[in-house]
Length: 286
Length: 80
Image (cartoon, rainbow over all chains, first blue to last red; front, top):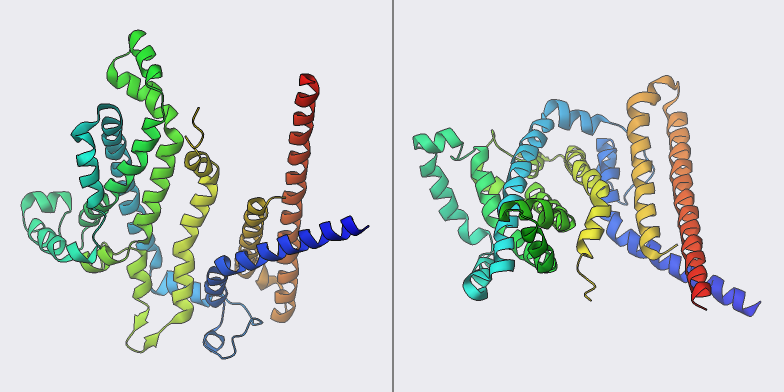
């Protein structure tokens, strides 16, 4: 009987802790979602109201009046393009670092060092580079000028590539060289070995890198704020556009933020299984 | 049910709640004469669906654990 009570107490404590931790993590998201359903008069009242008549007016304002789906479309294009470039270039570079020990580790460290300074340190040179590139015919053709998607794609690629290479190097190092040697003995060319043996084995790691890169690109604000005005603005800049001279429209801000969070949330939930497999990939070595 | 399983199921249950609210306000509420009644019914439906999902996840986790334990017992029995 005493043992049963002790088990119950342990379970209650465990679930209590789960609820508290879950509350801390989820509360800001819940608050944002709650605010997005509130009518204007209930948004800023003190004490906050948890019981109110929900409405979709804020979503209507964000989607119809402010055309927020335009920002989603821009962000999707920029993030996906940048992620594809980062994953492809990062995988090839990481494989070379993992197998051929290029630069004896020095180049790999140099690549990482480009992540050591804050983005604000390079934003002015980037601004000047893209401003001047946009005036050239090649820059115009590739959409590399200010307020064009190419500028953000290049910036995001530059900033995420070192992270991707570092993440992927460890995944490739965990793949036994013997598998590649066997495939070579079977007559496969080096590129075929890469395509048919190495990349499928590193797929969970590549998926994790892709997911993280996509999340970084989707949530980035500084580059998008400085390098775009209207035509290539992303969701983070779109949310900021609700900060008007008349005041901050908190309801539409929350609605826009919820809309911008949802695609990533659904995507991450769908990729969760691969992410867990990728993050634990190579954790146990024989 | 492990911590991470409960976390995952809880978060998904909240997402189900929010999804029901979205769908209800956009599609169902217009069929109610009183908005207050609609809100009450909406919350009830959302809570029931969220709890049902959590309970389903809990039962599935228990089943999986029982199956894994049975497998381990069988293996240990074979070795003995």
